[in-house]
Length: 391
Image (cartoon, rainbow, N blue to C red; front, side, top):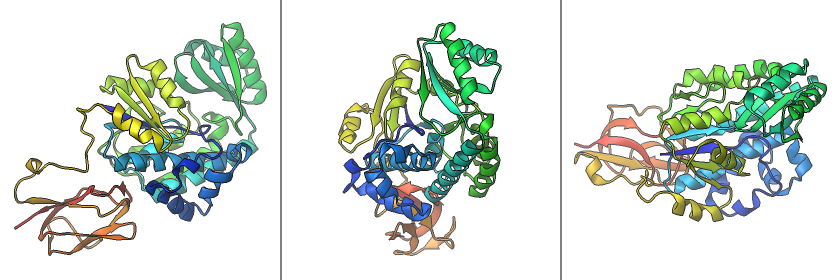
């Protein structure tokens, strides 16, 4: 089984959009710019490292880049059994599974980044990576510092991030070295993320998450907060708001996926840091990262030939003779027609919805059994949209 994983803030790189110019999936950048009210293309093509380090730019560009890579992978027909994302990447995972629409995901990430930026200005903080020390000893170092410092990320065995006030992080870093840490690396961030310093951002974001109304999904997402599988939309309002001021339990998320039978971890988006974490955490795991169009061919080769990678191609024997599928004419965001309901008899040529600017017309007459695609979901060309039973 495969799991798609999506990176968080810090994975962004100057010029990371250049390899994708001219690729079909670049169309997402224009859509994201319209929703965000920002020139995302300029950020992906021309922004320097300092501009991208701004939380508001880092989160938006990483999120949209990851979804652009996902769109390209979906065009190949490769689908996951589970999804997970590191911090910001959790929002990418929710859009990937359809729990959030693309537009809602963009709006939430813009709101989240702005809220975290403001919280960082109100309560200045920093973060540092502690390498080569057990989880318990890192937590002991934070407690012994007797200051505002906490564990923020459980990334992998021997790789933990602490965060808090500059003074608290400095004290805990020195104690961690005394306890045997091989190295402590300050991180270039604008706040103490995933700590109580983000409480103001959490309260602000909670309203926006509730308004987005996450949906139930068929593909579960592992939450950073509790490292458990979730497929019920109502649960994400509290999980996403809690994520801001609680540690990211990424190591535990990977172990949960492994316990579910996942052996292949596919990181989609800029960077590649999650691939290294999976290798360190899950024994005998197969890992690959995809960040550029050139790596798509490598992914095809990497996927086991026996895995069902052609979700958009459904063999005839999987359907009864009187059943038909209506498929997408193009790639894009799906919007159903409101007056078409399950059980309705439709004629040949009836419009069932739109994929971007393209109409989805039924080539069959029949009774609508159900929509397969959900509103706001990004679909690929030839992906099933609706299921009919013909006369």
